Length: 195
Ligand code: GDP
Image 1 (cartoon, rainbow, N blue to C red):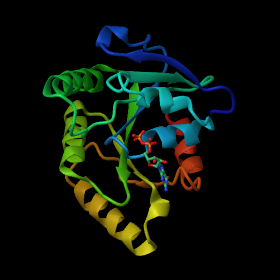
Image 2 (image 1 turned 90 degrees about the vertical axis):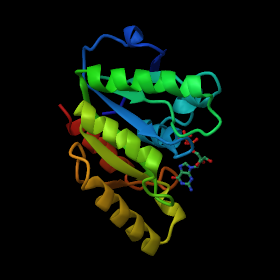
Image 3 (image 1 turned 90 degrees about the horizontal axis):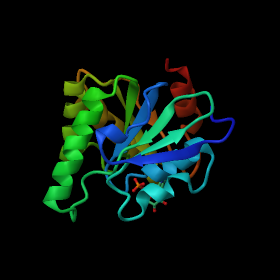
């Protein structure tokens, strides 16, 4: 997986814009600035692939990437951005809800959590939505290089405790650093193993 070219396919703003459900897909969700673009770039071995999704105006789009012979990689808009107007947030929440509950080929959601911050209320809302949508999700801790081993263990414990309340949670947590490359191969293998 990811041996060949990963390519940007399209940005989607409404359900009828989704590409044909002709293969499985995995999605990536997380608060703004959690390190989602960096992770997708590290995963795909491309330095600026996910940058387009970070430019203003594109941020409310669901961005689709194709992998040769593999699943779609789906970059969901970052959430928890304080400055976003209420109407924009509402529209995004509605699309997210429709997407998560309506996309039959979605095999797993990777929810990114900053190792320094742990699970916040806004993350927990997404986890609850994933439960309701019956989408299996897995937590990916980001920026692991930024914390001490002790704080890392603390963060993991907090996440484990929070996950116990979520029936859709996949128990294994993946610790990553896009900067150092930690956990990237693990995550790649995980995605490749999905059917
Ligand atoms: P996004 O808004 O979730 O797409 O976040 P970005 O990928 O743009 O990352 C936000 C900031 O965190 C940037 O300044 C990145 O350089 C930094 N960052 C992302 N991943 C890592 C990481 O693994 N380690 C470190 N030290 N910094 C990171």
